[in-house]
Amino acid sequence: DAGITQSPRHKVTETGTPVTLRCHQTENHRYMYWYRQDPGHGLRLIHYSYGVKDTDKGEVSDGYSVSRSKTEDFLLTLESATSSQTSVYFCAISDPGNNSPLHFGNGTRLTVT
Amino acid sequence: QKEVEQNSGPLSVPEGAIASLNCTYSDRGSQSFFWYRQYSGKSPELIMSIYSNGDQEDGRFTAQLNKASQYVSLLIRDSQPSDSATYLCAVNTETSGSARQLTFGSGTQLTVLP
Image (cartoon, rainbow over all chains, first blue to last red; front, side):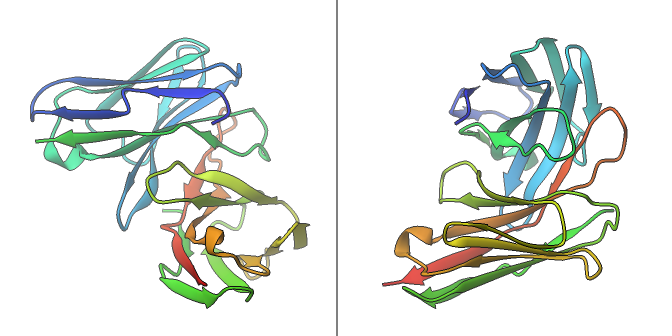
């Protein structure tokens, strides 16, 4: 999957606990993204990064924070997990340029009980 | 709210037939368009990109774009059971000079019947 590794692949956690998902790329792409995918909603953008320490909010950013201290790593943190954050989370990367597509990691299935 | 709409399906076609998947988008400024295939339990995989009006062909896949009608489609010729998947339409909805975003439709589930 284009040199993108997400960890963990599966996680079950309890409501109110913090959770961090990791995305690691070996492609040296500038842009990195976190999406969530839910039935009936498709893929929705949570946060994205356009460089080290440069991040911005997406469509559904409430309850999530991100950090990017190195080009290759993009972390997504659920500060206090809720059941509505049960979802499949995908990391994606792309080169700069309007015509560059996104390439996705294998996803993390998160269940909040 | 910039939107991308797809018929959710499910769409069923017999093996060997042409499958036609459709997508409309609301942002007239969109410049690039993508089709992704997603098998159940897997990540989306890019199969086609199109940037200008007309047709773009790659093997059995043809993407068609009509910017005036804000419409993009995907044709799959000689459909195979292995084409059974959910197909996602994605549209560039860049809103700032520092980054770009893709907005996805909710996907069309395609089943190719042997």
